[in-house]
Image (cartoon, rainbow over all chains, first blue to last red; front, side):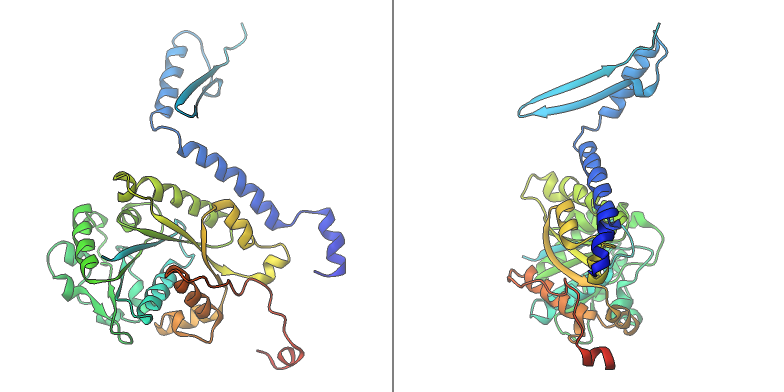
Length: 84
Length: 269
């Protein structure tokens, strides 16, 4: 690394460090999805259909997440109903 | 009983076939009876890299379908007595690679070899699945580049869930990282992910780092696995990787920029 590079490095992160950061985020996200059971996307769609029978709702207003802590699994449902 | 090793990556063009040829040859050079099996049905290339393309009479699919015996299809290497190649077929029918068929051939190979190296095709289709399904160990070939690292992580997920060992609840496949096309100069200038970066993201044991090298193209031009080029950096790095695969503790080389002396600068080297 030359004398000038020392100053340049302060200003801008290297492209390699950008690559590392982006990879860490996407890999963590994809690993999380991988550990989910296969039925979760279908469960999400079914819940969405049931709610849509009563209120119009966008897909992203229903969030289904499964967390497991030890032997206990928690199914977390987060449903945002539209303003009346 | 043989050890079955899959060479996989997800992404294409990262050096799976070069690696399969080099590692297979390296094991045979050290006295182990070894066969390298091409799983890339429809796009066979291992034969070219190993330099036996004109001696393919029967292939993997022929053996599965009973058109030829395994011994008729095994191609003996010209240079080493204990090295063999089983070529992939050029047929486009990928379904020919049935699980029962592959299982039977794997059993037969395991009975007469010390090492079975499975050269996986790119992607996550049938060929790639069959290549990894029976494996005891996996060499995940990765380039220091975002798409390759991401695909490698995906393959690690499949190795731990979609293999025979996983389905039978046995010990998981032993996974090794082989970083190829590594360029220490670009790493030093911050343009390329370092070994440490990739190890941190994938968190599996590092088998070796193969530097980006002109020797690899030269070797494939001639159909001679690059590990025979003992003068070259890539050849030496593959030799080290084979030693590590056999359990030796060999320090990693070619990770840092080689400082050239004044004479080398003047006369090239």
